[in-house]
Image: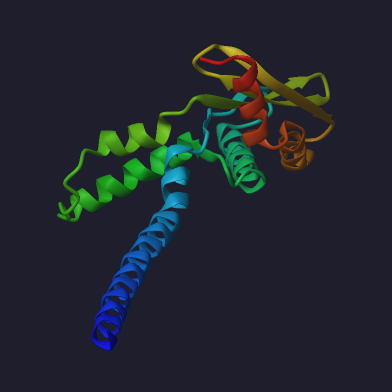
Length: 195
């Protein structure tokens, strides 16, 4: 009888250790799958892409260089205010192309891909943002817009007026604020107009 009890205890002990092993393996697999879940979920939800168009200049007193500087300030302001949105300007694309040109001139052919694919990936935006600077008499009007490219819909537009050229950089910073959180703005727009 005691040998039967010992055998039973041995079988139960083996089953217990096997079930602990199987349970531990199942828990380990569950923990690993949960560890990779945020990466998968984050990859499925991509950042909205906004392309900043070159500044549209309607003024006799401003130069193209000043327009480019205002455009840089605008795109930097949008990036800083919206870290969850991929903001790309024409200046970024120009810098990328120049970098690739210089790299190829130096004989570095390590990149096996197509430069056009890199640029296309950068510019493939669902939204564009425009900055316009106009002069009406002695007043400068700075206007910023967010436009849905696919639907051709103006999502939001804001403007500010200033009376001197040296106030334009502050005016550009001011028009970025009312555009608000672009990620939320785009999300609510896409709920209103699903594609």
